[in-house]
Length: 131
Image 1 (spheres, one colour):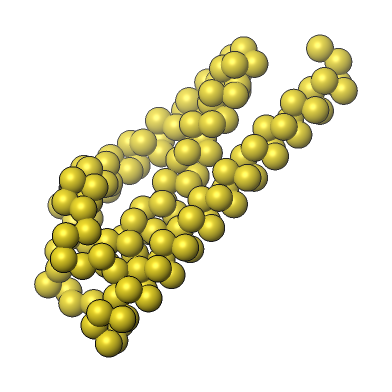
Image 2 (image 1 turned 180 degrees about the vertical axis):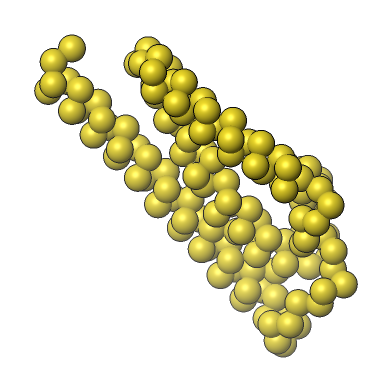
């Protein structure tokens, strides 16, 4: 492999990752905006009651929180559901970026970067699972 091929591969990876990050942030922003608009329209203000424990992660890990969020669905408060989903999307964006990098390096059979990326993926997963 010569330097020209290496450079073009890195550019493809960087371009893919930048698009992934941009899409994640834009999707999160759209969900937040829609959630705020729906919540304001239905409640007339932006005061979220602290009694609604469904939007708090306390006492569970992030993955079980996501599972319960999707299993429960919007139910009564679509605005809060969309805002929570927007925050979850923003948190998962770098996680998906690391998965994409790991898959890319595995496809290119670059074992050194697969190991580095796998370490970062494990650290992120453990961090989200223990939260």
